[in-house]
Length: 150
Image (cartoon, rainbow, N blue to C red; front, side, top):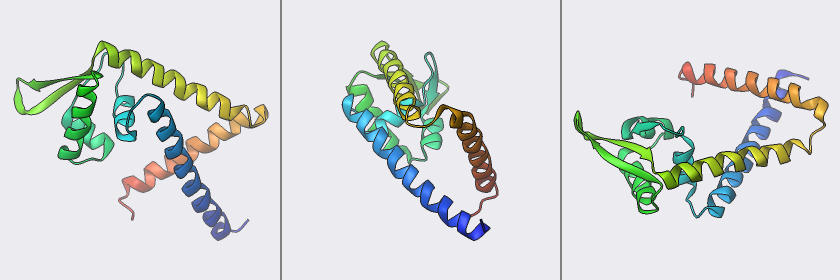
């Protein structure tokens, strides 16, 4: 297959894959009464991890004001605890509350379960090649992004 044809197929597949992955996240978030942004924010946390607002904003590619609204929502739902950083009052430390830790565990399990279900529709002999191909695609995409390509 010519590279132009392959590139076009890859472009169409990644566009559809992104749309479907976003829909998958929306559905899982709605089950737990979360916005998609709240869901993505919670997925950044490890069990006992404390993140600062700047690192969360960078990882989510959000403005500080947009992140503040997301954190406000998660605080109101008692999923995260926000504290002013004593070393830098402009910075916030954000950690999961006990309720948030429980929810993140549920979300992580549900996320894996969804992908287990998806894999059941793919022949088992294709699982390893699929993972390998996706790892190569992700590495190539990371490399492209690191170059600052547009």
